[in-house]
Amino acid sequence: MIKPFNFHTHSAYDDGKETLEDYVKAAVDKGFAAIGFSGHSPLPFDNEWSIQKSDYADYLAEGRRLKEKYKDHIPVYLGLEIDYVPGHSDRFSDFVEGAGLDYCIGSVHLVMKPGSKDPRDIWFIDGPREGYLEGIDTIYGGDARAATEAYYAQLREMVITQRPDIIGHLDKVAMHSRGEVIDTNAGWYRDAVNDLLDAIASAGTIVEVNTRGTYTGKSEYYYPEKAILAQCLQKEIPVMVNSDAHHPLQLDKGFNEAVHLLQSMGFKRMRTPFFDVSLR
Ligand SMILES: [Zn+2]
Ligand SMILES: [Zn+2]
Image (tube, rainbow, N blue to C red; front, side, top):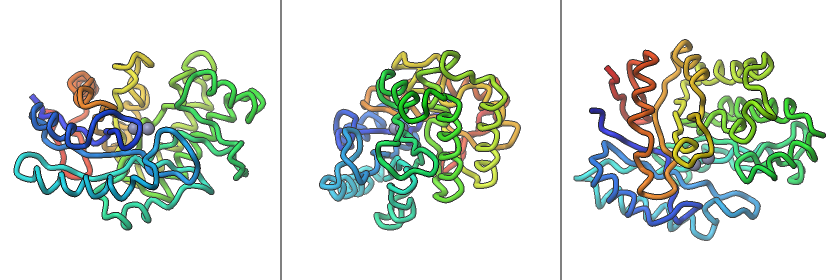
Protein backbone atom coordinates (compact mmCIF):
# COMPACT_ATOMS: atom_id res chain seq x y z
CA MET A 1 0.00 0.00 0.00
CA ILE A 2 1.42 3.35 -1.02
CA LYS A 3 0.67 6.21 1.34
CA PRO A 4 -1.36 8.79 -0.58
CA PHE A 5 -0.42 12.45 -0.90
CA ASN A 6 -1.89 15.40 -2.76
CA PHE A 7 -0.26 18.63 -3.84
CA HIS A 8 -3.16 19.97 -5.92
CA THR A 9 -5.97 21.30 -3.71
CA HIS A 10 -8.39 24.24 -3.78
CA SER A 11 -10.09 25.62 -0.67
CA ALA A 12 -12.69 28.34 -0.06
CA TYR A 13 -9.87 30.87 -0.61
CA ASP A 14 -10.34 30.22 -4.34
CA ASP A 15 -12.89 28.03 -6.13
CA GLY A 16 -12.90 25.10 -3.70
CA LYS A 17 -14.90 24.37 -0.57
CA GLU A 18 -13.95 24.34 3.13
CA THR A 19 -10.91 25.68 4.93
CA LEU A 20 -7.24 24.87 4.54
CA GLU A 21 -7.34 23.35 8.01
CA ASP A 22 -10.21 21.04 6.97
CA TYR A 23 -7.90 19.74 4.26
CA VAL A 24 -5.07 19.10 6.70
CA LYS A 25 -7.40 17.31 9.12
CA ALA A 26 -8.77 15.13 6.31
CA ALA A 27 -5.25 14.32 5.13
CA VAL A 28 -4.22 13.29 8.67
CA ASP A 29 -7.39 11.17 9.02
CA LYS A 30 -6.65 9.43 5.71
CA GLY A 31 -3.05 8.68 6.72
CA PHE A 32 -1.51 10.87 4.04
CA ALA A 33 2.26 11.19 3.61
CA ALA A 34 1.93 14.93 2.84
CA ILE A 35 -0.50 17.64 1.80
CA GLY A 36 0.07 20.74 -0.32
CA PHE A 37 -2.07 23.85 -0.85
CA SER A 38 -2.31 25.11 -4.43
CA GLY A 39 -4.88 27.88 -4.55
CA HIS A 40 -5.27 29.61 -7.91
CA SER A 41 -2.82 32.52 -8.08
CA PRO A 42 -4.31 36.03 -8.01
CA LEU A 43 -4.80 37.36 -11.56
CA PRO A 44 -4.67 40.94 -12.80
CA PHE A 45 -8.26 40.82 -14.05
CA ASP A 46 -11.63 39.91 -12.55
CA ASN A 47 -12.51 36.25 -12.42
CA GLU A 48 -14.46 33.89 -10.22
CA TRP A 49 -11.95 31.20 -9.47
CA SER A 50 -8.65 32.63 -8.28
CA ILE A 51 -7.63 33.94 -4.85
CA GLN A 52 -8.63 37.60 -4.71
CA LYS A 53 -5.72 39.97 -4.17
CA SER A 54 -7.36 41.16 -0.94
CA ASP A 55 -7.33 37.58 0.46
CA TYR A 56 -3.86 36.61 -0.69
CA ALA A 57 -1.94 37.68 2.45
CA ASP A 58 -4.48 35.75 4.56
CA TYR A 59 -4.04 32.61 2.45
CA LEU A 60 -0.28 32.73 2.92
CA ALA A 61 -0.51 33.43 6.65
CA GLU A 62 -3.01 30.61 7.20
CA GLY A 63 -0.87 28.20 5.19
CA ARG A 64 2.18 29.04 7.29
CA ARG A 65 0.21 28.72 10.52
CA LEU A 66 -0.95 25.23 9.56
CA LYS A 67 2.55 24.11 8.54
CA GLU A 68 3.67 24.93 12.06
CA LYS A 69 0.60 23.65 13.89
CA TYR A 70 0.64 20.22 12.22
CA LYS A 71 4.39 19.75 11.84
CA ASP A 72 4.44 16.74 14.19
CA HIS A 73 1.53 15.07 12.35
CA ILE A 74 1.97 15.64 8.63
CA PRO A 75 4.24 17.66 6.33
CA VAL A 76 2.20 20.60 5.02
CA TYR A 77 3.45 22.50 1.98
CA LEU A 78 2.38 25.96 0.89
CA GLY A 79 2.08 26.47 -2.85
CA LEU A 80 0.01 27.96 -5.64
CA GLU A 81 -1.43 26.82 -8.93
CA ILE A 82 -0.14 29.69 -11.05
CA ASP A 83 -1.80 30.65 -14.31
CA TYR A 84 0.56 31.53 -17.09
CA VAL A 85 -1.00 34.18 -19.32
CA PRO A 86 1.65 35.81 -21.53
CA GLY A 87 1.59 39.58 -21.19
CA HIS A 88 -0.74 39.45 -18.16
CA SER A 89 0.37 37.11 -15.36
CA ASP A 90 3.21 37.91 -12.97
CA ARG A 91 6.43 35.94 -13.13
CA PHE A 92 6.32 32.65 -11.24
CA SER A 93 9.57 33.53 -9.45
CA ASP A 94 7.93 36.69 -8.10
CA PHE A 95 5.16 34.58 -6.57
CA VAL A 96 7.46 31.85 -5.26
CA GLU A 97 10.26 34.03 -3.91
CA GLY A 98 8.00 36.88 -2.88
CA ALA A 99 5.92 34.68 -0.60
CA GLY A 100 8.50 31.99 0.22
CA LEU A 101 6.31 29.31 -1.35
CA ASP A 102 7.39 25.68 -1.06
CA TYR A 103 6.39 24.85 -4.65
CA CYS A 104 4.17 25.83 -7.53
CA ILE A 105 2.04 24.13 -10.14
CA GLY A 106 2.07 25.83 -13.54
CA SER A 107 -1.20 25.63 -15.48
CA VAL A 108 -2.83 27.15 -18.51
CA HIS A 109 -6.58 27.73 -18.27
CA LEU A 110 -6.54 30.94 -20.33
CA VAL A 111 -4.99 30.75 -23.78
CA MET A 112 -3.73 34.05 -25.18
CA LYS A 113 -3.97 34.27 -28.95
CA PRO A 114 -0.38 34.26 -30.28
CA GLY A 115 0.77 37.81 -31.00
CA SER A 116 -2.12 39.44 -29.10
CA LYS A 117 -2.28 41.03 -25.65
CA ASP A 118 -5.97 41.91 -25.92
CA PRO A 119 -7.94 40.23 -23.09
CA ARG A 120 -10.77 39.67 -25.59
CA ASP A 121 -8.41 37.22 -27.35
CA ILE A 122 -8.21 34.96 -24.30
CA TRP A 123 -9.73 31.50 -24.81
CA PHE A 124 -10.99 29.95 -21.53
CA ILE A 125 -10.56 26.18 -21.88
CA ASP A 126 -11.78 25.16 -18.43
CA GLY A 127 -15.29 26.58 -18.17
CA PRO A 128 -18.58 25.38 -19.65
CA ARG A 129 -18.44 23.68 -23.05
CA GLU A 130 -20.42 26.45 -24.78
CA GLY A 131 -17.82 29.08 -23.91
CA TYR A 132 -15.03 26.75 -24.98
CA LEU A 133 -16.60 26.22 -28.40
CA GLU A 134 -17.48 29.89 -28.74
CA GLY A 135 -13.83 30.83 -28.11
CA ILE A 136 -12.67 28.60 -30.95
CA ASP A 137 -15.22 30.24 -33.23
CA THR A 138 -14.77 33.88 -32.33
CA ILE A 139 -11.02 34.01 -31.60
CA TYR A 140 -9.76 31.39 -34.05
CA GLY A 141 -12.44 31.56 -36.73
CA GLY A 142 -13.45 27.98 -35.99
CA ASP A 143 -9.91 26.61 -36.40
CA ALA A 144 -9.69 24.17 -33.46
CA ARG A 145 -6.23 23.08 -34.53
CA ALA A 146 -4.83 26.64 -34.33
CA ALA A 147 -6.49 27.09 -30.92
CA THR A 148 -5.07 23.82 -29.60
CA GLU A 149 -1.60 24.51 -30.95
CA ALA A 150 -1.70 27.91 -29.22
CA TYR A 151 -2.52 26.11 -25.94
CA TYR A 152 0.42 23.72 -26.22
CA ALA A 153 2.80 26.48 -27.34
CA GLN A 154 1.78 28.54 -24.30
CA LEU A 155 2.41 25.59 -21.97
CA ARG A 156 5.79 25.04 -23.57
CA GLU A 157 6.70 28.71 -23.17
CA MET A 158 5.60 28.46 -19.52
CA VAL A 159 7.85 25.46 -18.87
CA ILE A 160 10.85 27.14 -20.49
CA THR A 161 10.44 30.65 -19.07
CA GLN A 162 8.71 30.09 -15.68
CA ARG A 163 10.08 26.70 -14.56
CA PRO A 164 7.17 25.47 -12.42
CA ASP A 165 7.82 22.42 -10.21
CA ILE A 166 4.74 20.61 -11.55
CA ILE A 167 2.76 21.00 -14.77
CA GLY A 168 -1.00 20.98 -14.11
CA HIS A 169 -3.47 18.80 -16.07
CA LEU A 170 -1.31 18.76 -19.19
CA ASP A 171 -3.91 17.97 -21.87
CA LYS A 172 -6.95 19.62 -20.32
CA VAL A 173 -7.50 21.40 -23.63
CA ALA A 174 -9.01 18.11 -24.83
CA MET A 175 -11.53 17.85 -21.97
CA HIS A 176 -14.48 19.24 -23.94
CA SER A 177 -13.53 18.01 -27.33
CA ARG A 178 -11.69 14.72 -27.47
CA GLY A 179 -12.58 12.91 -30.65
CA GLU A 180 -15.11 15.59 -31.62
CA VAL A 181 -13.56 19.02 -32.06
CA ILE A 182 -9.96 17.89 -31.66
CA ASP A 183 -8.53 14.67 -33.06
CA THR A 184 -6.00 13.74 -30.40
CA ASN A 185 -4.56 11.06 -32.69
CA ALA A 186 -3.79 13.49 -35.50
CA GLY A 187 -0.14 14.03 -36.40
CA TRP A 188 -0.24 17.77 -35.63
CA TYR A 189 -1.67 17.06 -32.17
CA ARG A 190 0.97 14.45 -31.34
CA ASP A 191 3.67 16.86 -32.60
CA ALA A 192 2.40 19.68 -30.37
CA VAL A 193 2.40 17.35 -27.35
CA ASN A 194 5.81 15.96 -28.26
CA ASP A 195 7.39 19.43 -28.46
CA LEU A 196 5.98 20.23 -25.03
CA LEU A 197 7.24 16.96 -23.55
CA ASP A 198 10.75 17.59 -24.88
CA ALA A 199 10.77 20.97 -23.08
CA ILE A 200 9.44 19.30 -19.92
CA ALA A 201 12.13 16.61 -20.07
CA SER A 202 14.87 19.27 -20.41
CA ALA A 203 13.49 21.36 -17.55
CA GLY A 204 12.92 18.37 -15.23
CA THR A 205 9.31 19.42 -14.60
CA ILE A 206 7.03 16.89 -12.87
CA VAL A 207 3.93 15.89 -14.86
CA GLU A 208 0.93 15.31 -12.61
CA VAL A 209 -1.56 12.57 -13.34
CA ASN A 210 -4.64 14.66 -12.56
CA THR A 211 -7.61 12.44 -11.65
CA ARG A 212 -10.24 15.18 -11.44
CA GLY A 213 -11.96 14.52 -14.75
CA THR A 214 -12.62 10.88 -13.89
CA TYR A 215 -14.37 11.46 -10.55
CA THR A 216 -16.36 14.50 -11.66
CA GLY A 217 -17.55 12.60 -14.74
CA LYS A 218 -16.16 15.19 -17.15
CA SER A 219 -13.64 12.82 -18.71
CA GLU A 220 -13.00 9.10 -19.05
CA TYR A 221 -9.30 9.90 -18.93
CA TYR A 222 -6.78 11.34 -16.56
CA TYR A 223 -5.04 14.56 -17.58
CA PRO A 224 -2.88 13.64 -19.37
CA GLU A 225 -4.26 10.59 -21.14
CA LYS A 226 -2.42 7.26 -21.13
CA ALA A 227 -0.74 7.73 -24.53
CA ILE A 228 0.98 10.87 -23.22
CA LEU A 229 1.97 9.11 -19.99
CA ALA A 230 3.59 6.41 -22.12
CA GLN A 231 5.68 9.13 -23.77
CA CYS A 232 6.61 10.49 -20.32
CA LEU A 233 7.86 7.04 -19.38
CA GLN A 234 9.89 6.79 -22.55
CA LYS A 235 11.38 10.28 -22.08
CA GLU A 236 12.04 9.58 -18.35
CA ILE A 237 9.83 12.49 -17.28
CA PRO A 238 8.94 12.30 -13.57
CA VAL A 239 5.25 11.84 -12.72
CA MET A 240 3.05 12.09 -9.63
CA VAL A 241 -0.67 11.63 -8.88
CA ASN A 242 -2.86 14.58 -7.78
CA SER A 243 -6.64 14.78 -7.49
CA ASP A 244 -7.06 18.56 -7.97
CA ALA A 245 -9.43 18.40 -4.98
CA HIS A 246 -12.01 21.14 -4.59
CA HIS A 247 -13.37 19.57 -1.39
CA PRO A 248 -11.56 17.66 1.41
CA LEU A 249 -13.62 14.56 0.51
CA GLN A 250 -11.92 14.56 -2.89
CA LEU A 251 -8.40 14.44 -1.46
CA ASP A 252 -7.67 10.82 -2.39
CA LYS A 253 -10.14 10.42 -5.28
CA GLY A 254 -8.60 8.26 -7.95
CA PHE A 255 -5.24 8.00 -6.21
CA ASN A 256 -5.03 4.19 -6.00
CA GLU A 257 -6.42 3.68 -9.50
CA ALA A 258 -3.93 6.10 -11.02
CA VAL A 259 -1.06 4.49 -9.10
CA HIS A 260 -2.12 1.09 -10.45
CA LEU A 261 -2.12 2.47 -13.98
CA LEU A 262 1.40 3.85 -13.55
CA GLN A 263 2.58 0.53 -12.11
CA SER A 264 0.98 -1.44 -14.94
CA MET A 265 2.68 0.82 -17.48
CA GLY A 266 6.09 0.18 -15.97
CA PHE A 267 6.75 3.37 -13.98
CA LYS A 268 9.13 2.54 -11.14
CA ARG A 269 8.62 5.66 -9.03
CA MET A 270 6.68 8.86 -8.55
CA ARG A 271 8.33 12.16 -7.78
CA THR A 272 6.88 15.00 -5.73
CA PRO A 273 8.77 18.29 -5.30
CA PHE A 274 9.93 17.00 -1.89
CA PHE A 275 10.30 13.21 -2.00
CA ASP A 276 10.22 10.20 -4.31
CA VAL A 277 7.88 7.26 -3.87
CA SER A 278 8.78 3.78 -5.09
CA LEU A 279 6.09 2.01 -7.15
CA ARG A 280 7.75 -1.41 -6.97
ZN1 LIG B 1 -6.15 23.96 -13.01
ZN1 LIG C 1 -6.47 23.05 -9.89
